Image (cartoon, rainbow, N blue to C red; front, side):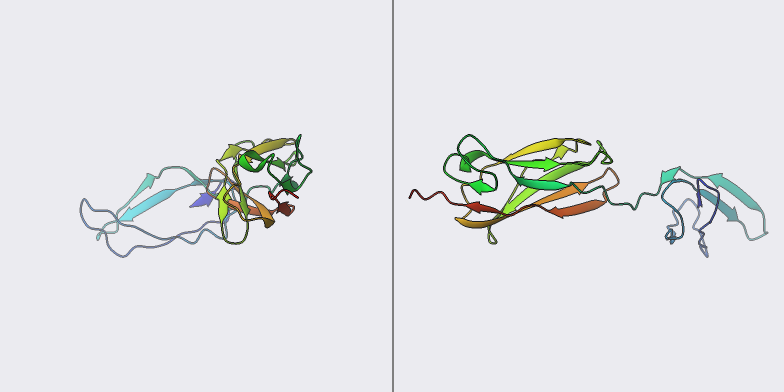
Length: 174
């Protein structure tokens, strides 16, 4: 396996192949940079004759997606920022702000938790340089401290977690 830059290279050897069979080989790619990869296979028979095959191209991506810069319960018509009350409990809006360098192909979810129960939003695309609003029904959370977190995943499956601003749930009338 060779990176797009041409070096370094990683390789592995298999001792025997079965006719019409499949051989699986594990290769440590940690020395290669994240980039498109060229995969090639060379076979050698007992007489020493070799044949080279071009494998399927691949891309190495081990870099986690960019984390947001903030995540918090948004202020609404009947609630202050970072508060969940009777006016927004059924549709709590969480605002997540993404830096300009984020990737629009990444997906993110928001989790709010009271320490016992965790509620997760649906996945939405990251919006570089802007905010994305997530809505979660927080009715099943108990009143008290609520954590806000964001989990972003890129197309390669790499993930990033981000802890947002804590909120308070108080739905009991004075």
